[in-house]
Amino acid sequence: MTLIKGICHFGLSVANLDKSVRFYTEVLGLQMTERREKDAFFLVGTDDVMALIQYPDGEEKFDTDMRPKNWGKAFTHFGLTAASSEAVFEFQAHLRANDVKIVKEAYERWDGASLYFLDPNGYTLEFIYFDSSKV
Image 1 (cartoon, rainbow, N blue to C red):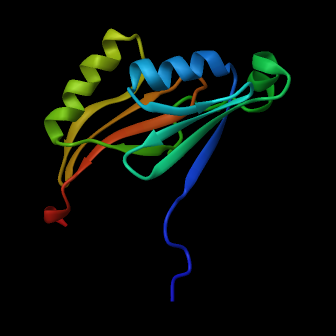
Image 2 (image 1 turned 135 degrees about the vertical axis):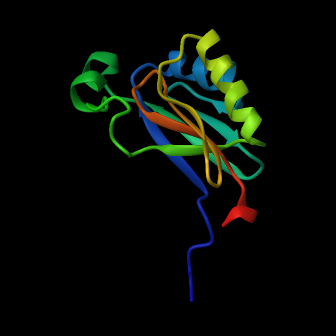
């Protein structure tokens, strides 16, 4: 019997909350549901929540303690769902127009399409269309 029903939310420590809020709202288009002094919450899809939490002692301390050292070269990431394979390629153009670092260009996969990019904190994100009918 599985006791875990899903992911309620996930949280990321960020170097600069204002820059991160701008990226996740203006570039990725996520809806911010609440903003407080040291954190912000976003709706992801219809039911999931992502929290951005200002790292204590600011950006310099974040760079020393937290910023991913591999900058998109490691496989640790989280994926955001795309509506179609075409949407993955369109989103890549949107990211480029917003000077977002792309670490793996959009490509067709046997089960859809995928693209990897970095947020302002150095976290790797994937934008992925997964066609479950091909599994």
